[in-house]
Length: 284
Image (tube, rainbow, N blue to C red; front, side, top):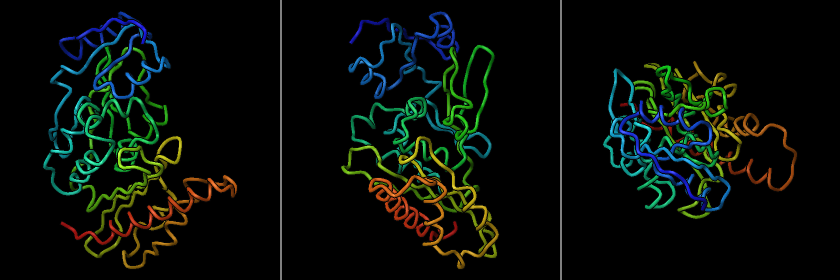
């Protein structure tokens, strides 16, 4: 590992100032689960690290209006221990069922989004529920849709830090279900599917979001598939047909190589499982 300077700002504004002072070679570090590994492997050699780990303003879980706000340096372990109502409980469940204990203890939600490894569960989660990403720079605070952030439209620019993730309120969905497949319990996912559902009083689908992650470069919202179902009765949903369309929309025409067929079957199975669970969850 190459020698580097480690800076500990006293607040978010000072962190932004240090990043501007040291230019594009400076990197932000919080839990360090992705960056430190890259530095050990010498695929990343930043001369300056600006640590956000000690900034209380960037950690913790709170509500603002109808939104659930999770600070960027909140660890997976902290998030997994949170007692959250309604579908927000799935956020805690996802955080408690990834990687292993050391990673959950040190890894942060903001770090996962900045690393943007498509296998990370948090990317599928924030895209699937329509979360917003809060970013701080010397110009002030801006928010960007999570899907756009991960696709590169709102990715961090030099001198910016990710400060929080804003999740929709409890009333946004009746159920959110996340399914994934991994080879070992501490491995990153090979494929994942998140299904978010809201129904109306007539048992019709008022909102449906199905998102495929891990198996694609960025999480894919199956918008065409979902749009065709909204307004219809829950009892009329053909889960097998929906799963087939989700596979087509997320993977497209990638041929029939054995590896592609494997992922088609994998995503189809996860989509059926997630959608079935989401549609049969009792309304609160």
